[in-house]
Length: 592
Image (cartoon, rainbow, N blue to C red):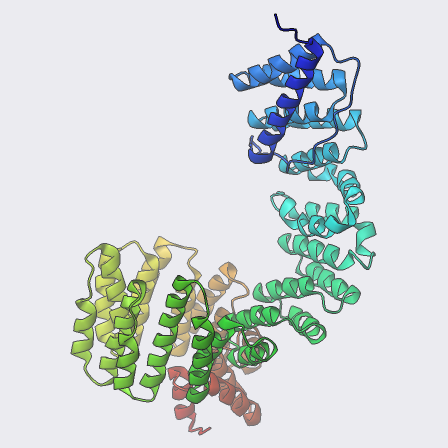
């Protein structure tokens, strides 16, 4: 008969049960209302030998595990928590908390974690559990001391990662301002530490930005740069703020790049500039990035696109050649194929600009990516239209493969765009009507139909459709703006136009295009100084060609002709074929 020592059996079971608990905690996320996720699995605490461990304790652990695994988590939690209290063992407290989390009981999980911390006050793992559960339960005000302890106990090599994770950790807080204040309080020592200060300020800045405190976020980014003049994190925060409509943040990006010219950061800066339609500035950043890091593949493609847009065709071709050379070295065939397809499409556009339609067709024929066949055929249709073969171009689009509703929608959209480009607005309106018939409740399609009616000179239909959009979706600010601007452009019902545009601004107060519309109403009403002020604000936020055309006209009417010419020339460089700009210059008899 074999002999088993019951204490050996107990310790064997105990190790297995605790290992199982750790594994479960590491890979399972739980939630309750409010949702609570299991904290990240901490490093295993050493098992402390305790003479008090006896058969009764073993039985409690056994019952706790069995109950938890057979559908009675309440009993399992109670047994495990009692065993933890009897043994003062951190892993048993953790297991009790995990059982509660698995049962979606955040309050019970918190009770277990707090009991753990009370029993082992210096335990980093216990402190972390309490901290993360309180944050998950949205009890943010109770976390400052816990966060301070976590930071104090974090090893220097991992503190930077801990600080960087704070915005995500507190990101679910319902009171964002409180979360920012709590974290600022807890970070008092870190914010003045030269080693951790830049990261701490950036994290605090992100929390302030999430709370809507743009001034506070900007101040945090500045303080990060004061501690580290080349702080990439501060520059990334500033870029986010630029994208959110805080132009003052741009100087911080420029400052960081002057101290530490990181090509990838320049690339991110260029993307923001592109989003603001500041194409010349974006091109300058991309040119610098390609000098600093010539193998930066994406930069060459974007630069080629900008040079094409600026009609610098030899430069665009050179950029594309470099892009294709770098791309051919990629080991991923999918990336190579997608990239080459983009290059072929751009080459076709360059050839089209040169009116070398045979070369453009040859580039398009090289595209064999099934996902891009539609784009290639759309370009072929555009080539035909440019040669006056409108009927053939439309037939090509109509006969593209695909009979599903989505296929029909894409084909009709492409045909509308083709007709727009050829300024065949009445035909485009008719095709857009077919699109609306496919999805009559799609307000964006109806809105586009209204805009085409205006282009075709049917203002009554335009107004009827826009009022239909407003009735269907009262918060759709584009409809208010378009209707008000159309009235202002025609010099009709200007008071009503102003009311419509002000309504649009209620929904989108910082939209530069709506500000441009309001300025145009003021100009038509004779309030030229107010129009100039509004347009300068709009143009600074978004140097769009049409805003530039309006600003130039207002400046011209005020007698500031040099300033007007400067704005018009900037706008013409961006888009020399823009209808509004060309019409403005022709009407005023101005030649640039």
